[in-house]
Length: 71
Image (cartoon, rainbow, N blue to C red; front, side):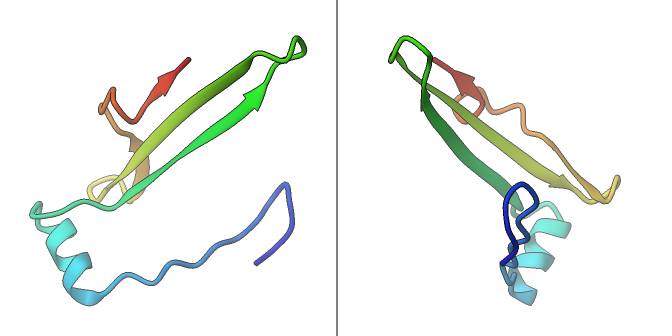
């Protein structure tokens, strides 16, 4: 819920998934893409992927180049 520019989304995570991610047997990822046209009508796309770092207690940019891209 919430409204742009500060929407708030809740995605429940199972206890099993949380344990797997926190012990290094899995991941918590936040990934998506932004698709748009520039002022000349040329399409562009940017992909992003962040992963949860349990030591920092925060999401950090994933090193995955397939999910973090621009064209």
